Structures are given as C-alpha cells and as structure tokens.
Image (cartoon, rainbow over all chains, first blue to last red):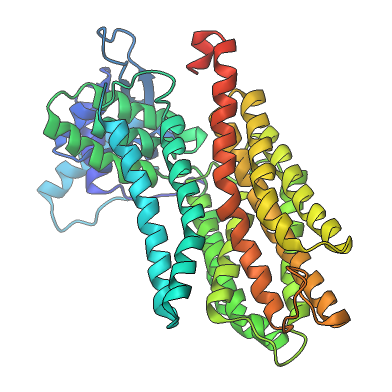
Length: 107
Length: 385
C-alpha cells in the first residue's frame, strides 16, 4: 500500500520547477538558484523524489573539458502527474482558500 | 602544490596534541599528586602522543590520496570530498553529484556556501529503509535504555550504569546506521562472531568480578567500558565489507589474546606482552592487508578489526586471570607483585584502553608502508584507483 502524504512546500516547489520544462534535464545548482534553495535542502528532496520513482537521474554526456559531468534530473511520468495535481491544487486553493486541501500520493 | 592538504595534516596533528593535553590536564585535576608524579604522568603520555601525531599525519597523507596524485581540490572541495566519503555505497552517486556540481561553481564565496550547505546533507542523506523499521529501531533503543537500569540492576547491581550507557551508545549507533542504510542486509561472518564472543566474555568476566558484594565498577570505568564495548559491536556489524581486513585483523586480535593467556599460564608477567606485542600485532597484519589489498584503507580497516577483536578478549583474559591468580597467592599477573583483588578490574580496564591507544597507530604505519611498498609494482592507472 502506497503511503499518502502531503509534500512539503519546498518539495512542491522543486516538483513544479522541474515540471516547467518537463522534458529538459536540469542540474542541482541551477535549481538552487531558480528556487533560492540551499543545496543542503535541495539534495535530500531530490533523493526522496528519486527513491519514490518521481524523478529520473542521468549523468551529463557532453560536459566541457576540465569540468566533471553533472548529475541531471527530470520528472518521470508519475512525477509529472504529481506536478499536475500540485498545480491544480495550488490554483484551487488560490481560488478557494477555505476549501479542504487534497492529500498527495508519494512525495 | 595546493597548501590545503598540508594545513589539514597540521590541523590533524594539532588536534591529537590537544586531545592528549586535555587527558593530561584532566588526570592532573582529578587527584592532587606530587610534582614527581606529574612529571611521570607526562612522560608516560609522551610516547602514545607521538605515536598518534604520526598516525594522524599518515591518515591524512595516505587517506586523502595526497601520495597518489597532486590534488587540484581547494578547501571547499576537500571539505565536501570528506563529507561525501562517509556516504554508504548506495548513496555514493549523490555525493558524486554534489562534488560535480561544486566543480562547476567558480566564485570562491559561492563555492564555500555550496560546500558548507552540502556537508550536513551528505552526512544525513536519507536512507532507503522504510520508516517503520527506523521507528522500530528507535523504539527498541529507547526501551532498552529505559529498561537497562532496573533489569540489570536487579540481577547485578554493580553493572546497572554500564548497562544503561551500553544500551544508549549501541542504540544511538544502531538508529544512525539504520537511518543511513540500505536496509538490513550484509554478511555475518566469523570475524563478527569472534568480536561478539569477546564482548560477551568481557561482560561475563565483569559479572564474575562483581560476585563479591564489596567490589564495584567505578563510574568513569563503567562509562568507558560500556562505550568501548558498544563501539566494538558497532564496528563489527554486518555489511561493513572488506573480508580480507576482517579475517586478518580478527586473527591477529585473537592471537594477541591467546598469546597473553599462554604468557600468563607459562608463569611470565603480562606487562612485557602488553607493552611489547601491540606494535607487532597491529603493524604486521595491516602491512599484509595493505599489500594484498593494494590499499591503505584495507590496512587501516585491518587495524580496526584487530583492535575490536583484541580489546574485549584481552580484557576478559586479564580479569579472569587476575582473579584466579589473586585467589592463588594474592599477586597480580601484570607484574607479579602483591596487589589487592579490587585492583584486578583497574588492570583489565587499563588493558582495554591500552590496546587501541598503543596499537592502532602501528596499524596506520603498517598500512602506509604496505601501500607504499606495493605502489611501484602496479600500473599507474590501477595505483590511482
């Protein structure tokens, strides 16, 4: 049985940022700067998302000489579904702030 | 050449000096003594201090790979490299991800911010075990700590404090291990069993010592004894890998304890064995493991296994034999002099501390010499790995 858990605000922000360009690979420092998030907060979130099958990872294949390949991230199918749910819920809660909030699956 | 490795070497050596100076000050402050005794205490501490200063230098020099290739890492890079080196195998990829990301950051202040933020994340990166297992381990640890005093205290009152500290240290380490682990798995081999037997034997010897109502375990002794045994069990836990180091190290530790027993039963004073043999028993196995395993780390791990096998087993041998000898003629097996039976525990506790303190630096030296001896014979790309 998959546990139902509401993601934290930071996790939701990471998922939504990755969903902005769902097909593109993103790297950690880029996400830190975009979300103004410390790497010490970002990496545990990425680890949990990957553990739950919401994030796929890969190593950069075209790194310039002198710099090691970066670790890259993008949402999986279930990750994109979660992002859609989060975006919809965010829109709903903005429109109806007193309405009860949904519960999330996975993250 | 980058100055950072040299600074870390110096910092490690200074740290050792501070630790031993603190030990000396605490020992002096604990009980007023004559100036001659203060001088003798200082002289006694000089030798292990120098050994550990050298060991700290070698650990940083060889452990960081500074002998293999010139380092291009700056201080934030090294800091992060040390933190990610503590990650369990199944999380190494995330450590590499952080290090690769840092390599792409050029601004010095930003590099420091990134590294400093990543260090705690690397040390506490979530494990993959299910939350119920972590909760269960925590509950068992808390219950064990709470129950230790009343349960053990009702059977062996003198060991109540020991039991509480033992449960607290081991429970805390178990929770941390489970939180960072990939689940309960690994290899329970002969070396682990030998260490467990040593720990059980040392507790049994202490229980035997406490049969007489007048005998007791002093508070500091109970805390150190419990902490040492808990660390031995934790270091010998399944899944720590490196079977060569485990078998060679435990074999050496066992040989040390059996050799001490043979020495005592042969009518020889134990002090010569205890002071002379650790150098050999730690140096040679670590050297062999470093040569065979082609790795400094393999030699150091062998030293750890030697210590965790030898210390509890030798403590048990020492305490049993002290009690036996005291009942026979009132002398100590340590040096053959007459000694009160209550001093038996003090002798055994000193031996428990002496083995890792006096022996482990020799394992580091053996590992350093072994890894250096092997290097010219292997291809450069293998030596760098």
